[in-house]
Image (cartoon, rainbow, N blue to C red; front, top):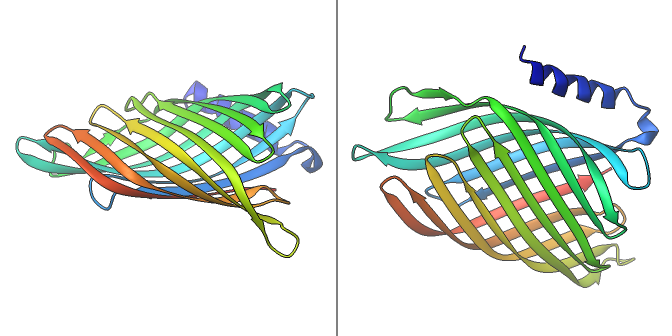
Length: 239
């Protein structure tokens, strides 16, 4: 077993061995598609253990699935990539309304190609993730995410702004929010940029949320340049 995998697994075991009352859990999942050139789906679970007023230790494991296409020798090559990404890190509270999180770990990733030889590529490697959250006001927030994986030199980033516009429910326990997002992703074979409006439904007591995003995506790869509409769905639930 590689040394960095040992470190990641050891970190996760240490978290799991902590007293249950000290841990906060989170689940997250989502998918994005253009119904054509590319698609992306993910699901994961994380744990957060505060150790001081400003610092919390974090661990997260993510499962993901990516599809994309490119041209090679006049033939369209379809790619599918499956990945598991365990991460450990920390969150630092810059101010009561602002925090940053840094993660490091590894990624087990396999990419399969249709109409290309070799038909399988091993993209295992290291991984890093950055998160920035700013609660602009009780009704509005900004979120910045970035992830890098060294195995296939892939990048994924997102910037989103949301604002609550309506509360509903018998005790106003739900909130409707509107906002905008921009997303960029790519590796050595393709790049894609997408952005547009966001709609959020949030459960105020738990801070769980459901997000829908739509807009155009610009996609470029060897022999391909295209603009298509995209649809993205995501959920987040802390407990």
